[in-house]
Image (cartoon, rainbow, N blue to C red; front, side, top):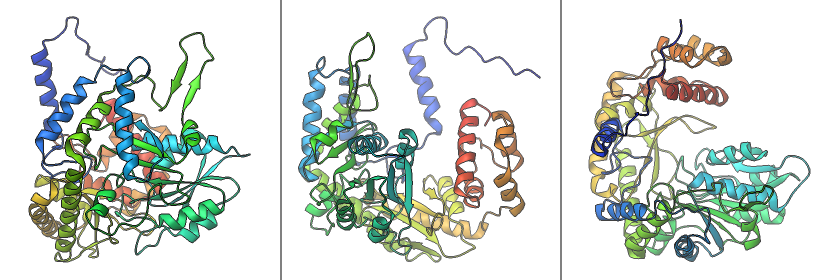
Length: 484
């Protein structure tokens, strides 16, 4: 039976501005809230409305400025120099590039490492299993191999000796996290960088999540191990400003110890009859809005403001960890060095995926994380500047959600279902067929446009990572195709 024709979306005559803005507001009604601290992932809130409003105005001021050509728009050079100057001052010097986010920063770090020291064969990147998937993505895009090394399953920190043993003649980059996102712990950067230097290999520190948090914790008197470009052997570092820098999304930096290494991140092409192309990032044409907003945010908050925000976020994390200890069946994984806390269950009758759904029903978002390489399934909390004021409410929601989850019992996934999914040939299904498969096993979207995530996560958790990836790709495709 032929499918219905796609309705015309673009109007013949333009629609009124007020009508369009009203539709945007309507479409956002099912979105998670970006302010207030009840969403413990994805968004970073200072709790200071005037800062976010300023960033929005600065973003709009630079919205139509094109970052493609800094000679045509010298304002972007002036702003980027100031932003990078502030970051290098706190993170051990070097020189850098302003990027659209952590993934782009990591992509450039990996490209620079590959191009700076060419080898025969496919280059390798040695990473701990807790490293962000952006490194796997970079390796995939850039024709490289990932060598994943297990971490200590008590501390969840990388094992420097195991990392050193994993290096080969094809290794062009070794990575440490400061901290790793899943558990909020800092890898032994000094030891990993020393091993890399001894082997003549470049070393990157992924400080995307912690790079603009850890320096302020240190300046506030907390013990923070060395992690930045001041550490011998560290050759590059990524730091997101749209995380604990509290800038709007689209703001990160990649720093390099040597300018020569930074130049290997660039791309230039004169092999066509048009304008000469020189790019410092993966993107060519791009709005300067995120740069303007990041600059305004940083200048408005200032050093003391960042110290206060960092201290408040860490205090909230410590209060959360203390509160978790009072909830039967729950425990914190590892000992976080930054305000990122992973909470797992030791009770088979207390399902963390059900906890997450129960929290969602109470107006909170707790981020589920699947089990992997010794790390059990858990719910993850990113605490920000706004969290200290609301941490008691967060704990109450967690407590109530845990009690409700215990009463509901764990999500049961039939073994025959996971066996069938693990052996299913997904190439035989189009997006509509895959959506039908989801519906047949009870996975669909509720009235609010959100999938029943406890079921989804329980199924994914029972499958090997490669199958998880295949199913997630198919789900995303079906979602955007309109079949889910």
